[in-house]
Image (cartoon, rainbow, N blue to C red; front, side, top):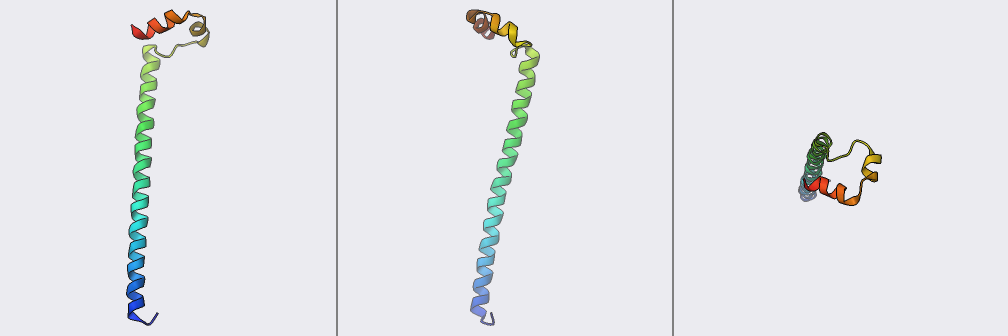
Amino acid sequence: MADPTSRKLLVVFALIFAVTVWVVFGVLSLLVVILALSTLFWFIVAIIALVTGWIPATTRTWRSRPASTACSRFSA
């Protein structure tokens, strides 16, 4: 490694590798943040649906209703 050309080449490849790793981990971190925000959003939607009654309290009453009653409940 005494040749200055090979050292310059090594530095160039090291910089390319460092930038590539930085970009890849940056994109992956961004995707993780988007996934976390999406999870938080759907958690809030589920809580709102549970509080407003869109999710029935018991499954038995939901199954015993006729389909027309169940469908009209969501349209109201």
